[in-house]
Length: 339
Image (cartoon, rainbow, N blue to C red; front, top):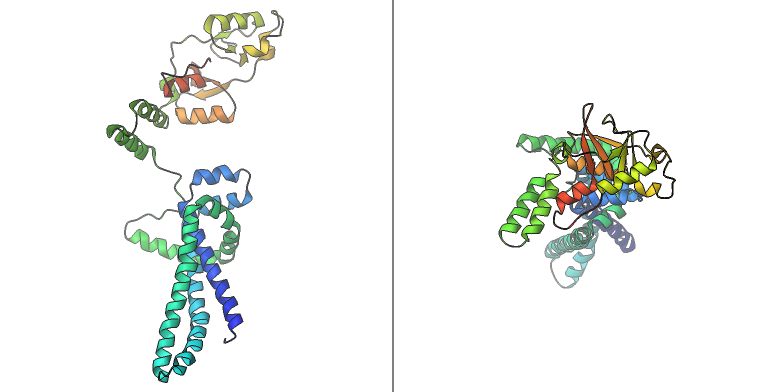
């Protein structure tokens, strides 16, 4: 292939493909999974990137396969063409044919290697590391298409690589880590507080937040606390009276047998007559098991838009958990939120 325009076009295409595979590889390695999860709600490419992050070793196999093929293509197309062009040039400068051939071969190898290294690898690597989530999302769909076509080969290569890795006692990782573990963060917070890089007050708050992973809501709820509630047949006036007495804005309905059937926000009753049934303003009450972690409970309360949950242990009602309880635990000096 001696036509310079064909060689140039082929070289640009091959180097571009190599840059694509390098960028995909480093973007998925550097991307934060939680950011991809946030973007996946509204973006198809982000969902594709998230799927790729769950098949990390397979994606790396695809990237390495693509880079290897591009390297071989440059060696098969660009290097011989450059060698063919340089040899007559050196021969015209007076070098013997053998010396001109060797010089042309060496210089062609250097030129093609530098081109591939700088343009096809280092530049896209730097771009992907600087913008990991953006580059991972931008390149996700074409990479998924390539993986779909070559998946059987990638699985075979990946299986062979994983077998070798396990032979040396290492378990391969198939997904991008979501972040630091709670233990690692606790150690970081403790170290930062000890060296004076983090204020003791902030350290206590962060440590309290990390405890939410293991702390159960049964350990947080006070089982001796009186439930702010009214009976199933109570009126709006009784709801308002309980609010004035307890200071709580959300009042349970049907607490006579300690089995609340609903919850009323006193705000909804402000324009109602005093003798109106409170049950007409009740909303379903969220019930959580006392053995659930505080972190999981808080997530469910946020997802279901509930500020209050009844905590049970089997058939028994242990108490009530509110967002105010969680906030007071995290920020004891500053937050005072009505329940």
